[in-house]
Amino acid sequence: MRIVNYFPLFILFLFSCQNNKSNETSNELPSNSIFQLTSEWQNQNGDTLHLKDLQGKTLVVVMIYTTCKSACPILVSKMKLIESQISRKDIDKVSLVLVSIDPETDTPEFLKKFAKKNGMEGNQWVFLRSNEMATQEFANVLSMKYKRISPIDFSHSNIISIFSPNGQLVEQEEGLEINVENVVKKVSKVVNSPK
Image 1 (cartoon, rainbow, N blue to C red):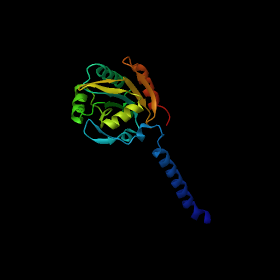
Image 2: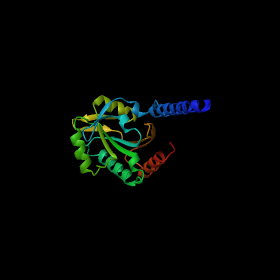
Image 3: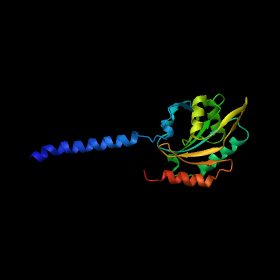
């Protein structure tokens, strides 16, 4: 009879321990996660968000500016190629993120027009802009250098970065000859790796 009385308490104890354990693991981020950055961003729909709002998906990230006439169009076309080659069964687990280095020009409205013009309108496409300080902080995390060289032009590194769903940098491809196949393989590996 005593065993029956204690049994529900024992089950409750076990359940609460499991709950605490799963909450701890889901809330803990690695110290080198980009989701540790607390800056505020706006997307192409004008929504305000933090980088941690992108948590849970594999991220493919590039920094560009929409009025660029040289390197950025190549980077944009590489991102589109990457997106087209990601398995359709995995696409919902991936966000392709384009971060503006020219937040003054690249307002949410401007980013939305740019997305539409370039056929980058699915849920997998995320365009972000913030203030100059947050943009520079994010660029530093990516080891991406940029500077304004005229009122309408920037000099910048050309890097595509892959982040795991918990925000850790997995791999980077640098230069304008980005190996799309390598990026797609790495994305697939991260998406399908055991959690």
